[in-house]
Length: 104
Image (tube, rainbow, N blue to C red):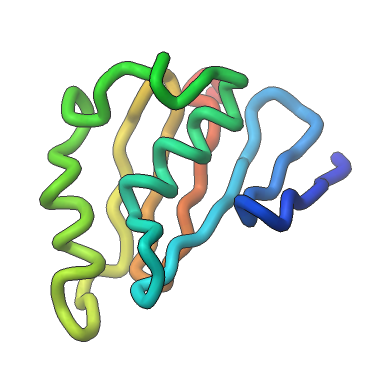
């Protein structure tokens, strides 16, 4: 499996269709965990972010952002959920991993 990195989005792409795709968000930037999730799933699926189903159908976006950015230091290690046929893991260290839910 070969990986490439798009420096603009900091998303790693794998050549196989199940991923994983990885991106990062930073507490000190305007990029939020929600933005990173939607961006990574859009890249993984090849869809425009606006064509994806609302993230609120999978998880509360405000709660997700607050969980990882609302405190000086998050005590949550990670949150995993399904969104748009992908397994998504958001980690407290700023990583977002996306993998096709069809990989089983």
